[in-house]
Image (cartoon, rainbow, N blue to C red; front, side):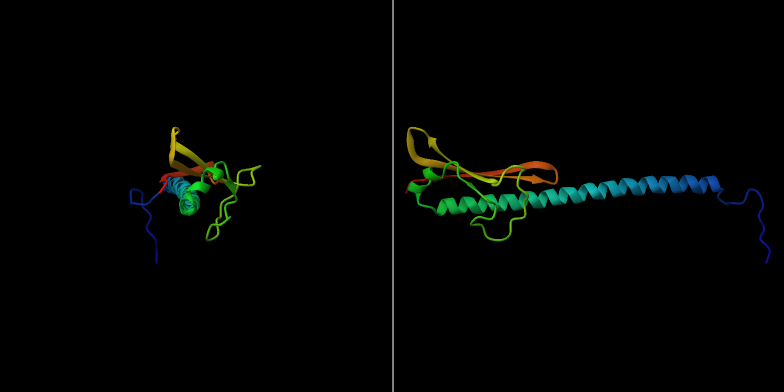
Length: 141
């Protein structure tokens, strides 16, 4: 069998193939960068959700506590797993042994019948230092 290679036929030159490969490689690198960034954002979302779940759980424990005991808890700090169900997989900030902080403050300083409860969780995440804060109000019954 004899191959007939005439000029003008629809074949690609080596240069055209190399240019196409360069375009393909650049496109694949862009796609890889996008996928890597999306994976980091997914992990960041998981960390934030875990921290929010820990803060809400701590807040529910505070809401269940007797009203008279709440002012004494102002400024209290807790390890992430202290009294919380499930494994909390957050890395504490460097130099900090606790990352969950409780703040209790009266909504109206002249009347301590309504308190604002705030729980803040801090951690060192994939995107740097992060914090989540959740709050609620509790009235004396």
